[in-house]
Image (tube, rainbow, N blue to C red):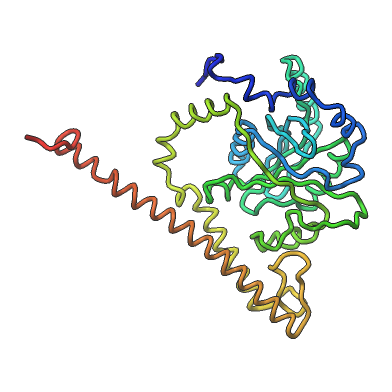
Amino acid sequence: MELPLTDKLTSNHLDALYSYTHFSSNQPASHTGDHASKPWVQDPQYFKSVRISPVALLKMVMHARSGGSLEVMGMMQGFIDHSTFVITDAFRLPVEGTETRVNAQGEADEYLVQYLSGCREESRQENVVGWYHSHPGYGCWLSGIDVETQKLQQLQGPMVAIVVDPDRTVAAGKVDIGAFRTFPENYTGQGGAGGGGGDKSVPLGKMEDFGAHASKYYALEVEHFKSTLDNKLLDALWNKYWVGTLAGNPLLTNRDYASSQMKDLGGKVREVVGGSGRQGGGGRLGGPGVAMGGGVSSSKGRSQDLEKIVRDVGQVAVKERAGLMAVEVKEAIFGGLKERAKAGGCGCKQE
């Protein structure tokens, strides 16, 4: 499917904000001076948000979805606008992935250099401003390996880490995504808000890794923007795939993830009730920094754990009910079409 590039597809006036050429040639002197002084070095939380184009977001989600239960990895291109990363495009890397990590080898570095050289030849001047990878089924946060990878990336300049959960994206009907940056070593400022908040639902097997590194990074707000061409591309994609979207059943598409959720919740219930693996019981599921001692604190921690499990179960139940209701609605609307077609063609009343 190709769209001919005409004046009707783009608007120089509306899209100028997201043009790298326009951005670099119209940069205020004060802003250029800010970047030259590298304010992110003095302020580890200088960057506040990430703005992602639909093209980049689609590429990341499709790549993450294609990996199944294995993690995948890629890079992102764009530029910096004050304290915001603007992501205009993304591309996958040929890396070896497992269910818990991705390993970028020399082949990936070679591919990266060749890809960027090709972009320069096509007059695309956007720089690499970050990397993305997937967490299939266990949420958007940084593991210990992810933290070390991001620290290495930040040594090269301002970089951001994006995490996409393809399973939760399909289950929720919206992209489950997070953006993060790490703190310097021995940083003692205000932190720990990053992807390690207590409201996140993390599988029992990932809980220890989730809490152990939550104070080493912080989260950035994720925003989206659409250019005129993006609107046209999304309309064309919808016109092509709306039938498949309507015919799809999320209960079937994501049944493996739903089953793993119920199994994990059962394990969490046994963990809380039995109090195994914790000193004094209670508090392990409430997020980092919530570990309790004995007595009243232990009882409070167990109550917090149970409340979190009940909340997670409620979310699963809501998604299941939504899926069942969608099936019933489609059956009520389209269920009799086949019988009407057999009886009298289009199903119109015969005179």
